[in-house]
Length: 104
Length: 426
Image (spheres, each protein chain N blue to C red):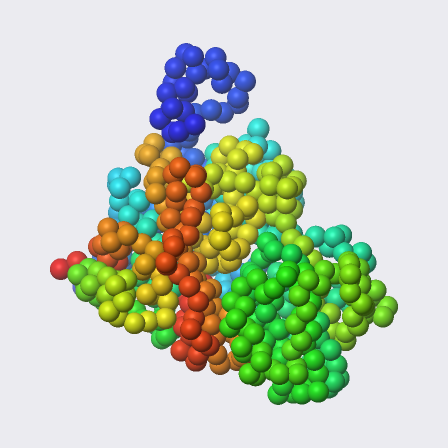
């Protein structure tokens, strides 16, 4: 019984960790910016599995930023991403990577 | 008026006398505010969900929507062409209630009173609000074409532009058509919902006819001078895949419909007769926006403040999606409505927290169109807010089109659909 309660608690805390608490205007702005990716990559970067669009939620913030910048500079090819990343500033891409990437 | 200014006025003696005639002038705090979201399409459903997410699930959000389920316009052309079922483009609203604590009222809105800050439902109930998010979609101006309202009511012509019963009816008419018959789609002058949608529909219908009734024809009767989106990509696909099957006629503005003879009359050119008529009239903001006096752009579309999507005609009513007078190069698409919703939701939460609103929002658009069952093309754009011009401007050098149609794009298109449906509703 004790272990069941523990698993439920663990599940709840894991679920809530999917969405960071917002307690400042700056955090809200950053979540809003990252949410512009969610149409294709899923809410908070957690896309629908097997939907053919690459899942990004397992990447670290550093890996994510490196890929976004590679798309933007043209060193990585793709269909949409090279076109979309060019519309964001480097600082915006960094903010997005920090929001959606796994923290170490 | 910015937030701090409003706050000051509301709490000062000068403010009280200045605003003495208003029934409500102070902004309700986040926990106490009642937010009504009207319309559960891509704009409204996303706004409801993100109002909850951005407020750490503390905002009181009620979604008012007459339909039992969400019906997606994107991918509905597959149903028209008999390649998918209505179930494939239908999603439940349950995710919003179960996962996000949004109260859902299944009803439509008959009136909004911006002065009393109340919303009247068709059932007769009246709800008060602190904030309204209005995502009313489009209204089809049936009276802009002589005889169309009657012809559409009788099912002689169909629109099938709002996904729903007509989507399936159009397929049934197509399935019942003789081999050698004519399917005609007419397109109004831009702006209208989903710029490339009619050309995708023509392509998928041609794909169906090529397989099942190869002697038939698809006529595209476009009021515009040329294809309004992805023109070169569509023209290439039609020349390569549907030569002799699709015929494109620019500058053909439908003036009237003769339901008895299934004939379209034009402003200039000769009449066109068809077996299946898919007539798309000019469009405007959804009826409730017009009725509330919000459509102050040519009486058709709603002007908004792009920082928070508040209607310029009424305080505390935020309008999203296809109903607005868009920023330059900002298409009327489901993807865009979802993006508007997030900007509006963040701004509303900031306002209710008494925080500054994000002064530099950004939105993007991605839009896939199928040229046949297995190949698609895309167009994409990114729009950054320009504080001086007070509008979104598309970033030069960003965005663009597919180099060619491909199966990879088709697979991404379905991936996009499943992800945006989930981001909007799950």
